[in-house]
Length: 494
Ligand code: DQQ
Image (cartoon, rainbow, N blue to C red; front, top):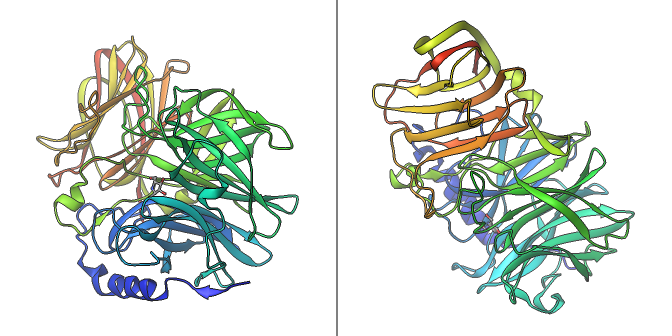
């Protein structure tokens, strides 16, 4: 077995750069309880896994600027998924330059005391899969000089350029890897399954699932797992066309509940759903923890938009969502913030009020959890204005007649523009049913982000915003009638 310290000098260079520059990031929009890189750019979560009793999170990392560049794997670990300890960079590009074997996304698993990784190496646009391992959860060694899954292991029409983001797991002592692929003939996403008995020698098994032609182009970052007797497949399709209020971002993340037989012949799905109905959610990954929880984390951002912290020279860009526990109910995926977040609650404030028109509360906060239950007594529109100042606000509004909840970040300070042609409005809407005339919203504000868990996690909306004002008021409103608000607010302190 070849064991070589990989990319050693590029790893050392990156670690030195981080050490020398991390104090230069501007704090203004930095989150206080969401995961971020120490300096520079981050995107997709990678290798989200447990190793030696702790949670490990790797991530796509370009420490040298707040823009995407030759990819490294940053690395951190945590005991509770909220407080993270940064560790040295785990993987780096093999050579200098944008195409020199940069380490694109992949996954990890713990096996017989070792932490195994599989990731994509990007060589002049040709993508291949490589492996690494660690015995201490800090230093990662390349296991093979040559990539273990290469372009000559592709089925007919599978693109050599779009072949990435392996998801690995072990079942009955056999290793499996599910790799994203684009079919060159029809420009559709598909997932290719490979297997191995020793993690070193891999063979192509089959194309496990293909797009039916309605699900965008390339499918990035797959994940496949069992949850409450369902098989769940998660992918992030690029350039999915919007449908009604759904899939309004240029790229989307979806889940499919389906079946695959014991021999993994194929994955059959009947329908798919957008995982998050906000603006900033992409490339989620999951792990199964030692408490048997299936936990998902995602990049809290979106491609092909300006990144205000980059535009403003703050020397960082990108963060992750709050880790969310996944369950299913009535054939839908339910997302619940991990319970550990409750440990960080302090200073409960409560407001109970029947509102008609606009009511400005005395509550002000931008690093907090809000648990809001709203009973509609008679109104046509009701909701909350957050991060409120003279000129700015983030608005959550429920339209009773059309049963639509909207999140409006169009008046929140620093502008965010994307390549989406149809949706540059900075308002997203999603269909929500009231339950016994009630809307329940659990919300997390963290300086420049909001995550909304709607009706106990049946839907979520995740978005960034960049206020210019220092004010962060909270107002309640009900128009064309009354609504009764029950608001609990905790400051979150890490
Ligand atoms: N980001 C990685 C790719 C992946 C994409 C590159 C998804 O491996 O397909 O940074 O955001």
